[in-house]
Length: 284
Image (tube, rainbow, N blue to C red; front, side, top):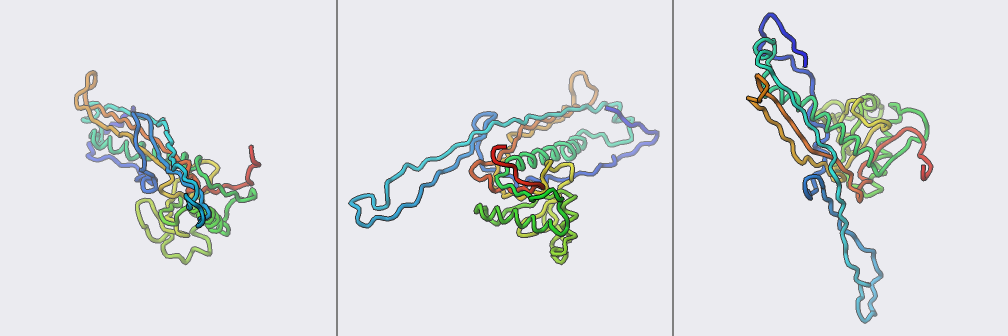
């Protein structure tokens, strides 16, 4: 890893831009572990309604069914790591604060957290049970973007997804259209008041989270997610600074995290995505 040396000592690094996690608030935590790599999600079944029979000799409520349950066992696939060393000579010669603790914090903020956010957004979009197509090849405009958001929200409501705890994840390019839409310019909360970490307002009952364009899943214009329709386990996140490591003159920093993200099959309709184009024919 290249080092920048200077003739004058400087005590602080010039920190790069970073973002706090934009997916944690909408992530799901309703799961248990079975072993080191398996996540177990349980779903209780339901039964059909009967016509009550007032004249039956027995079982007037209908035939008794055994209420079952479904377990979805999911294998975690993500096992990531990083390591770097800070040479004692670099610490004394470079015009930067090369402290191991600050370098570790920087790695988490600029590399680890964005990686998890992008991974989750991709998995959520891939597993979306509600997909709305524009019906044409025309891109969204400031005249159509709000209607598209309402359409996706309406499909979620038709699938009985609760109105609360919905988050609209929207790439910057689409967000720019939304804030220029005539119908929302007068909404004080949109684009004028931050309502939480990573959030920039609310529209149609959805908290808005603006996402860098390069982080957003390909082929998806925006996504509305209900919090409890996914499980997003982080099995562990281990970080450590080895002050004295054989073969290195200076601290060695190591990190490892095991995580994944899954859409619950029974409530996949709780994720709605909007795509430009026409709906593919069944079976294609």
